[in-house]
Image 1: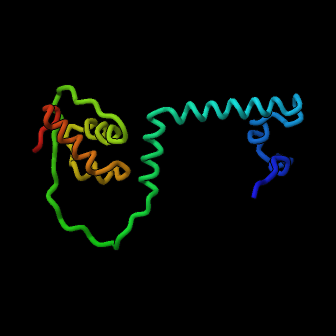
Image 2: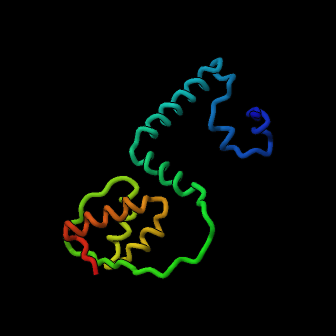
Image 3: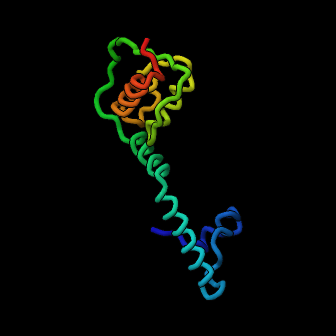
Length: 141
């Protein structure tokens, strides 16, 4: 069910929604058609960006329902790392956000990073940390 723009743009409507699109009467509808075409081009350009794909993927993972029953976690050994003052390997995609967080601290706990960045694959985070440790930019404590 769609709501006509004329109903949305009544006297109490916010002016921003009503001024975003040129009126259909303007230039015989050509101005509205051209405006919609420009919006389509902007959307296509946005969809072509790898960062946009990463954002959508992270949002999908975050919104995915978690299945299973709730239970208290078993106590586990925590894996601590210390950041070393040498250049870190380059990371891309969603895991780059987790690694940026990890490198912003002098020491971090791997399991905490995994919990904080639940929208990033745990395997990807562990692989990135292993790669960073192999490069010498992280030391396992």
